[in-house]
Image (cartoon, rainbow, N blue to C red):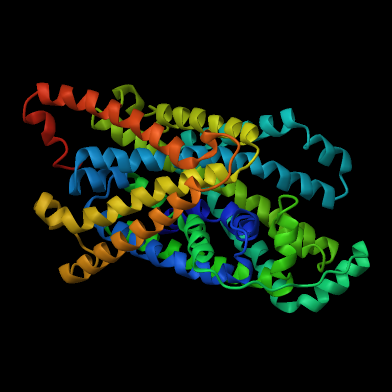
Length: 482
């Protein structure tokens, strides 16, 4: 894959629910954040930028499939490498299912906007919703198995269309204002809404920032394609930085545009009663045809998450299998398509469990919370690996070709580590103090159970490596063969 396809992999993994749903549903998940969503988003960008820089630096020295697993296992510790990547794999696998599941209401709303009421009603049937979500997952598993050309032919056009239709939201949001919204609300629903205010609260602000950190998760999927990239030592770092910058700017403008027209207090009131999204909020002020266009853009943005994320999680399993941590058959390559088809099928099965989990939990934020915990741990270990790489593996440290100044690398590593520890503490505290009906709705407990199982798996395999003597450990000092 070239630079464009790699960048698209990161962009499409980052945009989706993060841009159309999370900035508005956060008013329900973090009550009291009010008008400070954009400030919280900007603050959440800080650790994400440090993590992206760490990824870019390490990818230039270790351009292999498996990304975070390779970086941490070679630069810090094999066990921590597996924990970092298993955390990532589990979180993303669950979220793939969550995203597939919430795609269907967007398609339902699009059908309703087009006047296809029978289809819209059909899409509300639980069995139909679950079945279609599973179909989306397995369709993109098939696309990934077909190879890079099929993957690019789907991903690139959808990415450009997503940006074009998303731009309508930005233009419309800054064209109209809150008074236009009030007038439209009165005309359409005969409602009068009185905006309110809320005091700034640091605890709420930090909790919101920790959740909005999920908006930057996805650029790491670029690193998973290290073995399939053209000129990877240069293209991987460039793609990572391009994805983070372009998505960050687009996300900020998109969210600011919606809140420019729709008062935050109305967003909060609606979110407390039902699931909301950017297209639904702006539908009050937009002509029908433009409302249909932004609904289509939102649907494409969500669907576009799936192929890129499936690529990411399948390459992690492929890397584990190559190192002997997972069964070797998972690393099998399709004889004609040259893709890790077994790993992709297993990724599809895990994502299917995510669909069922989202359906029975009744709240997609549980899946997002699990992903945020997982990726904060992953990014934290990546930053630490940047600090320790020269001592643990000086040979690979000498291969770094991006931001080679060691003092700058240490600043990035240490600041990223400190910020991510803080965000992880905040996010964990918020989760553990949340009022839920059952203990398993705390994402922290689910994450700890999964990590315990992963640790048991690793140490069973590690004991076998020890039986093979020193040569069993040597695989963790060098990069896998391409």
